[in-house]
Length: 136
Image 1 (cartoon, rainbow, N blue to C red):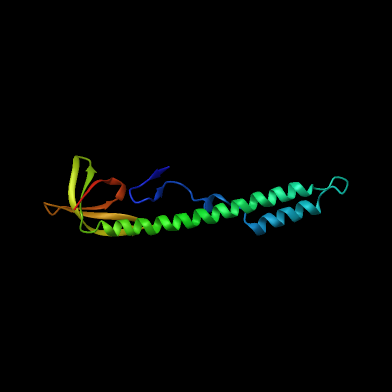
Image 2: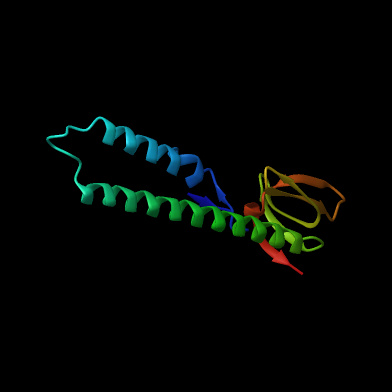
């Protein structure tokens, strides 16, 4: 799992996308299980409570992950805005490139920076993860 310079997780599915069963679906599955259980060998109450507790923990973890993801997004925006006007050094194909951050645009919530070098060359769509040094 990679994390870029402003704390955004890149290339990973969120827990919300990974979890496909919600509470209503869980209850429907459980009620179906109860309807079709063998009357001579009913479902153990402890097993049901264990399943319910595990599902409850999953719901709490999913909610926490969503909140953390939202905080990371706010942090990424804040840190990116703080780079405006700063002179930074980024790694380029031909070595280090030094320039001033002149604009920021957001694509799917991820910040992309534009840099203007001392020769007035504009380099666009730089990820904050590409910044090696921030100068004043």
